Image (cartoon, rainbow, N blue to C red; front, side):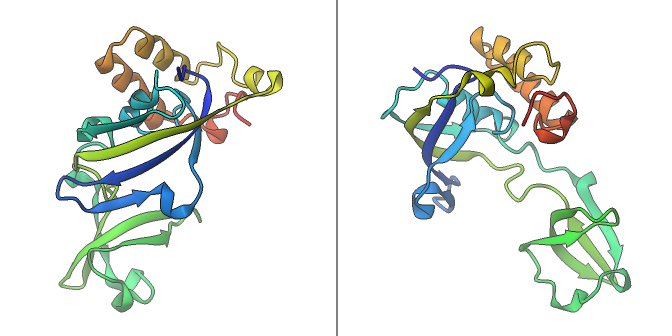
Amino acid sequence: MVAIGEKVRVHYVGTLDDGTEFDNSYKFGEPLEFVVGGGHMISGFDRAVFNMEVGEKRSVRLEPMDAYGEWREDFVEQVPCHLMPNWEQIPLGQPIVIRAQGGQEIQVTCTKIEDGVMYLDHNHFLAGKPLNFDIEVVEVVRQSAIEREQHGSGCACGCHEFKEAITRQNAEAAARVEGEAVDGHACDDGCGCGHHH
């Protein structure tokens, strides 16, 4: 069975309740690879893969709190059109990538343009939506002792609290701890704890 801390490769198909497909790893020809409980996946997907067997298939439905969260009105920014280069060419209702002042690229959706003002929605495009996943565990990837040591206990990144919560089979606690890890620093290379390489 897949355990917390193991690196797995999975295929999946993601759909909305109306049947719209928003992601499909089979179409890309490569399964998704991630460390279970590592803080890189939405919490509901992480929990779904936990305890699965290689070759097993599972279908799950995730509420927004276990996926990309609820849609938030305060994540919609009003920007004067003259501050946005080529604003006339921006498609309405479709995710686009823009460069912020600090140089980083962020994904937003322009929901409307009104009276010279653009409304840019910073919510994830799947926020507020229940998600359905058909998941197949393809492989558990063997990790070297060095790889395992790089994410040893005690780095305070939040992943270890998630491990304890999910081990207790407490879905609420697992979702809460996972959310804290994601909101704080996404538990990836940029968190500064020194254990993620």
